[in-house]
Image (tube, rainbow, N blue to C red; front, side, top):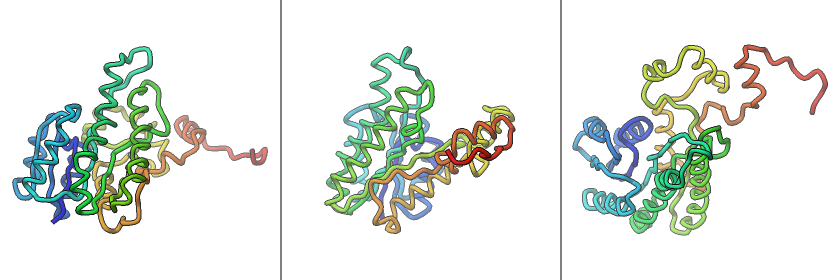
Length: 264
């Protein structure tokens, strides 16, 4: 039976990934800084290990890998989902905060890969990093976060290049807006008008659900993805391909008038 480590699994996308792997018959080690009790209750004690800890603690990845191997005897996949999403501008981002965001979003995935390398060599396993569209399309007041997600995509490619010789695949998922706390919480957070503005930037006219990210993670960890490595897979309802001008017209409620002047 295959085994996976998932960070940031206390809620939202991470919790959905943990449940998806568990339901698919994997043994799961789920970690989070807090809130891991709910995930532990959902997974139960059968083939599941839930650990509380801080990924900015440089010794934590090695401890998690060691505990996973002691409990389950093997490691087939690491899903680096834990993230610090604090929004800041250049003016109000102290170096300490910038460094913390990088520590969670970039350094921790690196350390987990390093700690799990020997075990992943034995199983020809895989690593999945949870990136973001902002890694390629930054948004205002997310300087540290956008930088970290761009770096994580680069780390994914670098590790894929370095570890391919061992049969280890490394990929990244770039989600769009996801209802991480459920549809009701989404509706409570955003007004009807605000929700519609979100939707106008998606060809599918909606935002995503954690289970849709989990399904892609499970696929990338499976043998069905055996020839995929170094990829950043957008799971974003088409947001990344939509021309910004189209989104602006849709948000304003104006029909795209075409291009009577010809191609440009």
